[in-house]
Image (cartoon, rainbow, N blue to C red; front, side):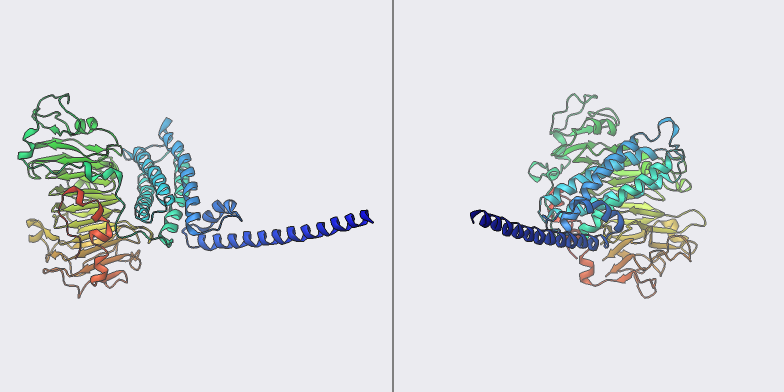
Length: 548
């Protein structure tokens, strides 16, 4: 009898656990399919849905409730892994003529830009993992810059040749699909960054020296041509006559500390400095201070016609975060006939320029990426002379079009935003749009425009700005020819409360992407909203207007 009872007990127990297991298994299957469906739904909103789904489906777990941030973090991890593999490929580029450069600097550009991308991806991952909504602003700025890096590398490789080129191009395109998907997920997540920005440790206001007046510089002692007199936290002095610590700006930059949390002031005395100056990514918080933009001039003459990439042509190239410049001029003297030739290129975050002059013809100022600010600067050029994909604000600047070559026209901006997920664009506020005397006198022979779309989501606004009458009534022009309709519906070109004889909007282009803005539209492009300036620009002591 006891034996029969035991058998019955175990029989019932087996049935119970079988049903329980079956129920749990059914629930697990249901949960798995629900998570899979959720993943498909999210991936469909990204630029590369199949890449998104295939890279994430193996990470689905029944124990983790999926959401867009979970998938974003996984996608970023995949992007970092793929980007690391691409690094090894790039390091071998150019070896044994496997990449033949038509333009000098092509491979170097790609290597430097990709290292910047890796840094951006790792920082973005850390910021998003912190669960601090303020850091979402940073992450989106850095991921936007990473996508821009890909485009710049591909532009240089376009003219190259060699057996490795197709392998490198394909790997580059496929790797950056994960970066684009990450940016897309971030921009669609419900976690919104605030109007402000969490202060970067590289912009520590407590350790920030104030700007120096001329009498404040009286403590700077000259001599010591090799820099032996320099004491950390003092000013590094550059003088072309040998009276400073260095006679070359590049030597002073090389001497400055790497990855500094404090600002390092490099005072460049009056003089003309013929050199191409680079501020590498590891030279953070450099401050370049001149004696005035009319007397302290850095000049170079690299150009695309002479075999350089546009990226590498810049007289001053800034990659180090937190860079500031005041009272100094940057010039590319190559001339109009040499076509693309940049005087200044900036691909560094939280950078600002005050009372500077920037001289060139085509592609004068390359606002490549990240967040930038220009105040009371004079900017000269002919074609696309403010171009790139930064989030940048110009305030109280004189933007001056020069006489182009015969058969050309002048155009101020060429903004290259190529995705609605990128938080980039050019905002020109309270500036003056002017022309040189020879262009004024020949304005009937040359058309002049406010901008044209380099890429299909190009974004440029003019706010409260004086526009002179040399600007064509249409205001804006297409990228290449009358039949080129690319981006006219997807771009965003706006004007708000401008004045002057060239500011009338009645005869402007009739594109869907052109807008006469209201106050709320315009406010989105102020320094507070567009480049989160209230939390970093104040520490520079540069003046700025935070609203309309």
